Length: 394
Image (cartoon, rainbow, N blue to C red):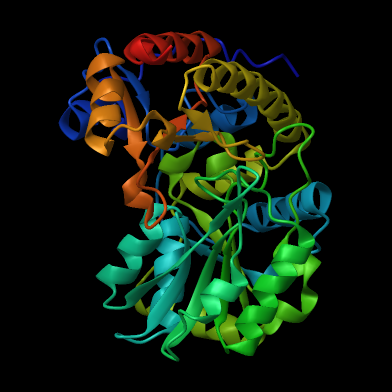
């Protein structure tokens, strides 16, 4: 395999790209001189097999209804077995239009309007958006910070239960904190759900994006097999290979009863894969794709070290240690600044579009999230701009 060129600057403006084309409207940062570090996709091309798969489908020239795609299912099984030690049976795999859609299907299938759905905040903002839009209540269970990293607060969380909780959504690895949960922590999550009769949805979309030298990601279904009767695992190739526009993800469900309930909702809502997505996933989940991911995580680790070193040199600003994902979670509380002030400096001073921490729920108010999955020269430029924007602190 040819070495991927992650240093290539690819102009994504004017391509219908949310991350670059919409940042002026959302943040007031022009793509002309700004740096987009908000939406969680990468500024890299996917591995060559994915491009070849798209070209092969396009070259055929007939884009009719797709049928069964056993190569897609077998590729998922191969990847999970070889990369994660998880033996998945073909019938366990259901498809949704991405994992936000998969989360929504779970909320729809297993809860009723007025029920409470637990999320550990700060956490991926789409969870709360989906829960509220479904007429359910978001139950925010704030994470604690110990030694600069997030920890689960079981003693505190017991006090937050009302008896109306029906589901817990786990983000593993954690977004935005970048934590890889240990097998023991996953067992505690499963035990909590069993004690309170909660459906457990484990969103593991970032499971391939673990930094070299960090703890390995544990698939919850493997780490705690007794959780399977109440467990839905969400996975996707889209985050790993930067093909989120394919809008395809997996709900992997070993329990037959849970799986039938999800199948019923998928059928009722008319949800099925499109033509391009399964072929792209089948191509990505391959030995060549695996080698590309290994190169990618090494490159991201270099970006992480560059970003953290530069940002942590600014007094009062601290980037949370990143074990997984490509999303740096930066705490500005030590500056003593109000949220509006440090946000203004980042957006208007440094001309960087970064996610506002408050959108991730309780505990995120003093943070911004920066996407470092972009060419290293751009990360270096972002660091230089941030240091200049906060020069008076140094």
